[in-house]
Length: 362
Image 1 (cartoon, rainbow, N blue to C red):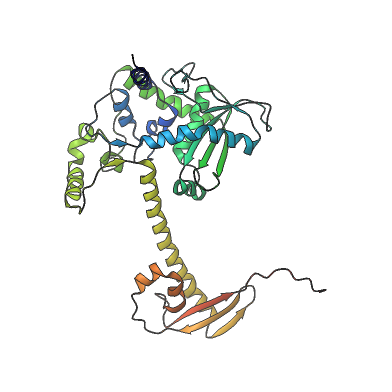
Image 2: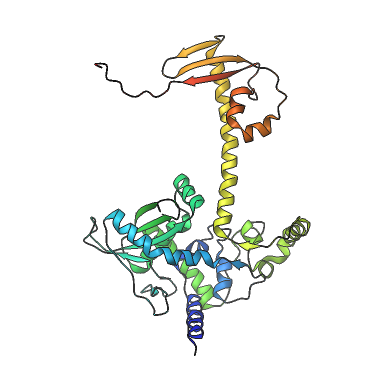
């Protein structure tokens, strides 16, 4: 056999073995937690039973390759950053980490990225290390909101399988100076019970009886709309949504290709979230300015102790396209245009500038 055929056969065998257990990257699906436009135990059941999907969705193998390439770099950065030592688990001879099964529940398995060794960096017992690489948008989303819940579940699942009492999640940003976020976590015994209960139910039904879990949420959920098994599973319930998507694609000015790009989907969701947050912030800003005008009373100008100068400016009609100007030139808008809901006047403020310490003896 040619080497490429051997590699393909080994990869196929690895994929076949994956169908016999629940891995750490699939826990959010087991628990029906929405993430990456996925998160459905029933869809996970279809995959484990090897049911042919209704729609072949393009997978981005580049993300997987990126993670594999950067994983040893991230492990080295983790060692230097935390002063700890890590060791790579045994490999299966085909480029995959050796899968470790739970000693009691064989349906649970994990291929932990690294083991954190005891005796270095204040570590007194072996722990598990899960490594993630994120682009700039996803990384800053983590800064604002914390790690993705699916990423938080992975170290807990690893501990469920290995029996270790603690683990680390290392998130490597793939921009700038490769910043790294590290979150240590202790074994959550309540979560272990959830894993056992939900995992046994899934395993008995899927691995044991060859049946699917019941639907856990309405067919109107976004996860159903993009699911690869959506017609086989709940086609009659989502036909109208599917028809709407087909019409959207047919009316588009350019041909649309449906893709499965988790990081892109999450980044676009972040954009929508930030847009809504900005709209809410703008509303709160207007309310605060109106309140400041009330507190200023009939005074036209004042030096406010602890802040700086503030002026009451007379409102004048503007014939500019204020909506476009606010979007394109927010600083000009803030300085020259009248804010909505502020009556016949508006504020212009000049806070104190930060001053460097000056040696009075000179």
